[in-house]
Image (cartoon, rainbow, N blue to C red; front, side):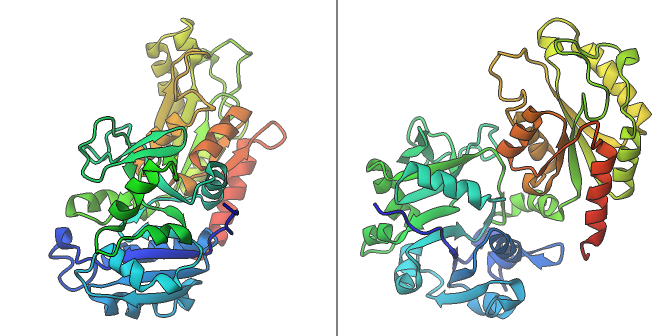
Length: 402
């Protein structure tokens, strides 16, 4: 298979009636339900633009004029928007078939009711690695966020089985679309109408031609009434920063030594001022810290709690949440940095968009954890302490129009 070009077109399936969202959908399609004064679909379109997409094709059915009237030709949103309209009760195979001649050879396919903070550069790298004509994004669901919704079996970076009925043994992971597809997979569409994912993904999986981009970052939905509160919190985009502890906030002890008592905790110059500046600019502060001294027997959880209490008192309770990994160096956990487990735990607890959450640390392991989680990362050091980095962040925030 010749290598396709990186897609510049996104195709959004947005034609359903949204019956699970009634009465909100009595007079609008479900992706037009508003959060913070803006329709859900607007957040999706702006993310696509920011990720380098230039064209959006919306496949509509129910109340298409509401979406068309809001987005127009897309120029107000920095993209070119086109529409294909079919009957409200058509399934997605029919919608795609009608629009087939307007779908490019390489494209991104989305469901209109899911928002997931995509990182297209990383997705495209993965797509090129797996070397298949299609790749779907899979939420790992290891936290049981979508209980009973697992629909795939993933092995070695490929979807080995796809079961939308969710009855097959061994399913682990939720297919959330954000799929990179090449035009030739559309040749597999059946003549009869059905859901596109049922028409394509099981047979691609059987052929070994369906890649999987697995993510631990939660996605947010406008698909059902009970999911709206979390989506509301997520799309509020409350400013948050994540900070390493030792070497970033306080003086780092020598290797294989730990801050085991409060009198061993020494703030670095300017770090308390940095925390105060973050508070003044409306940021939540989250701390993530490797504490292998617990696993190595040099300290206890109670010792760490005392140190944390001192840190919170000194900072005026600016810090909203503290996460730590208690495991020894070689236990193989998913929380010890450079693993991103603590960052994803903070994401789930606080409904963060990690792609919009700066992470400051002093160690290459911090940088690696940030990369794995998708956080923008800034390295701090004696030459560029936390206070300098926070000043730069807050100046940048002040410069952004509200």
